[in-house]
Image (cartoon, rainbow, N blue to C red; front, side, top):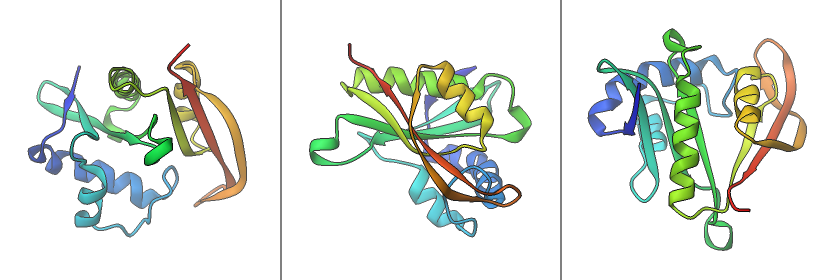
Length: 163
C-alpha cells in the first residue's frame, strides 16, 4: 500500500466512501446532507495543506487531509481527518494514513497534532490514535448525536511531536 498526495483525478474514487461515511452520521460532525460540491471543497485541500490517498493496485482505499489546527499563534499544531472505504477496513489503511500524517506534520515543523472532535463511540479510531501515542485531553459530554447510541462524548485527542 502506498500513501501519496491526492489529485483532483482521485476525487471520483474518494467521493463514494466519503459520502457514505458522512451520510451515516456516526463518526464525523459533518452535515449528513453535505453534497458533492461541498464535500470536495472541504476535503481536497490546496498546499501548504495536504490531502492524501492510500492506494493499492490502483485502487483508492482511503483518504486523509491535514492542516494547521488554527491560524496565527495556534498554527504550530496540526490537525486532520481520515476516511477509509468500508470495503477496505481492517487492512491497516487508517494506520498508514495516520502515520503518514504524523510524518508530514514533523517535516512541516508542527509541534503537536490535535484532533478536536473524535466521537467516543468510534472505538476503532480511538484505539488507533491511542496506539499512535495520542492521549485524550478532554471529553465533551453528549457533544455528538450518534444515530443509534444517542448523545455520546466528543474527545479532544493530542500528540506532542517535539521533546
